Amino acid sequence: MAMLKPMSDKGRFLTESVIRDMTRQANMYGAINLAQGMPDFETPPELQAAAEQAIRNGYNQYAITWGAPQLRRAIADKARAFNGIECDADENVTVCCGATECMMATMMALINPGDEVIVFQPFYENYGPDAILSGAKPVWVSLHPPDWSFDPDELRRAFGRNTKAIIVNTPNNPTGHVFTRDELALIAELCQEHNVYALTDEIYEYIIYSDKPHVSIATLPGMAERTITISGLSKTYSITGWRLGYCIAPREITNGIRKVHDFLTVGAPHPLQVAGAAALAFSASYYEKLREDYRRRRALLVSYLRKAGFTFYEPEGAYYVMTDITPFGGTNDVEFARWLVKEIGVAAVPGSSFYSPPELGRTQIRFMFAKKEETLHQAGERLLKLKG
Ligand SMILES: Cc1ncc(COP(=O)(O)O)c(C=O)c1O
Image 1: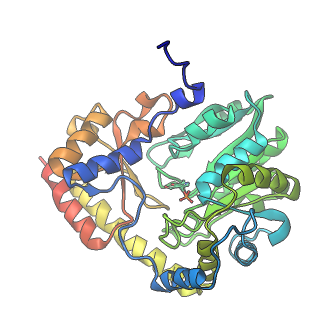
Image 2: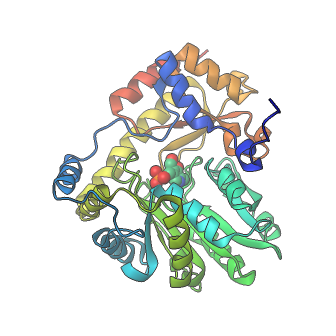
């Protein structure tokens, strides 16, 4: 038989997710999984009940493709109250299958092949494939350790005639950096000067360790008309498997995103959207407790990492710690992570999966701490074996 014709360039050039591969390795070796951003604690019982109730109440067929009205209304109310974003549930809000689909649908709606998209790195690993699938040419701008801020001149140089959009993820995965108001103001100024869209990923907006409020770039002067604000329910309510995310965008852009979304997935799971509206109705105490719980988990993990000998900057937000492995003589993150999962029994993510080219992350690995305190204690005790 003749050789089969090759797969598409997209199919060939996408590499398998390193993070999900680490999860498989963790399962294989019975290691504690501090790789994938997936909580091991219980989903709030009220939400479990709301999901069961929604199924019993008959929300079992397709919802309106761009989102069940009650969820979009709840999102619009939350966006006004928490983010300070003026928006209308019918004109500006689209519910997708997670922030993941939101970013993909937004890029497909805005990007033509060859358009440049500025991405800060280290970057959340999906943005690379998002660029391949939408045909965007990523232009990387570094976040520099120790505090993971960027060099304003490097950012200025990244903007050019072909720049279509910039992706801003704050609080940031994997660095834990929370972009300051000044940093966001410079990004906003450059977006306006070069007529560029801002695509924000604010999925960790409620997980910030300082008392400073979360700042959405859409609220800076002149930015509402060119910003697509993306967030979701996965992290805030510990429901990563429900696949609920949303985009808030000006009307015209929303129309484009909705069309792409419709043909990609038709819609997010209807009963879970209905239950998601109940999540958004939680009182302020839920979010205070969320922060307090994460503060404790962060304190626990960083104290073990410090004792074990890692160098790192304490995250200001999200639930990851990006560490340097040079104190252990580590020069190859992938080998180090493989050794760690097999011999020490803790899974982490090799730093190279957050960089382009990957070599830039060779001496880093990322830990995550969305875990029960007892799990973090167990993982921490194992990591102490690294000490001298
Ligand atoms: C920065 C960032 N964006 C998006 C996601 C995925 O969000 P969702 O579950 O809503 O697709 C993650 C998950 O780890 C993330 O870290």
